[in-house]
Amino acid sequence: MRKQIAAANWKMNLTLQQGEELLDAIISKPHSLQPHQQAVFAVPFPYLFMAQQKLSGKQNVFVAAQNCYSKKSGAYTGEVSVEMLQSLNIPYVVIGHSERREYFQESNQLLADKVTICLENKIQPIFCCGEPLQIREANTQNEYVAKQLAESLYHLSAEQLQQVVIAYEPIWAIGTGKTASSAQAQEMHAFIRAQLSAKYGASVADAISILYGGSVKAANAVEIFGQPDVDGGLVGGASLVADEFVAIINALK
Image 1 (cartoon, helix red, strand yellow):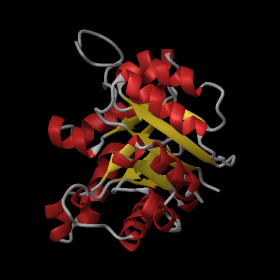
Image 2: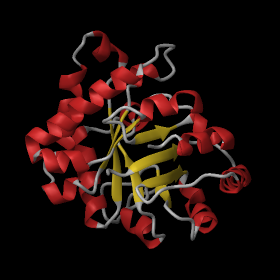
Image 3: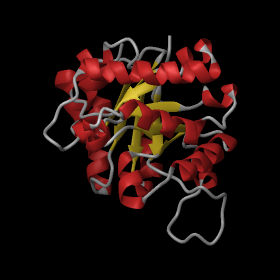
Image 4: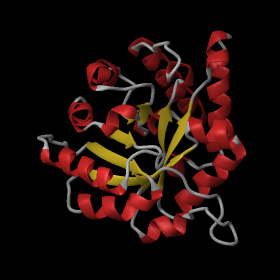
């Protein structure tokens, strides 16, 4: 069975003390992760070491960075390299989140470079893709997402691609008042898997975890995660509430 992942994206939220309290609260609540299930915490850079310490020894629980730079090292003030993350034993990095694309103009080519340098340093990218509202309204979301995949991932070998986790974010359903149904999530996840299958073969596509990143919460997690091509979620606001995120972890199939 593919890895089923509940990934928390804290974004730019919480003080160090609040982050510690949140992790303590989550750890203290009953949840059981099966061998094919994982909980991943994408915390702000200053909290990576704290999170590693808090979660050390916890079964199937991992820490992720929210971003990295595309260069190995050098005069890039304010950036964080994959070598720095590797030195902290960080196993995952979120790449190409919709906010990075929108606010910081991260291109598909830049994200291809980031994916490559992550894999070269044995860090798994959680690669985000998805369409904004105007693309969904024009009904061109399939072409839009296919282009993101092709330009950022298709330079990889089949072996490399299987180290990538994909997160589909329907940007139009985040903070717009519009809601993506579980059927819409499944439709796009199936499309993404079909695209990967056409490029790399069915066995490779079937091995890749595809997470859903559209306002997942405790109330809808079971229904969304129950879709055949949805392998968990990349969770924003709900991951900042201990009871909510534990319920989301427990909703993994």
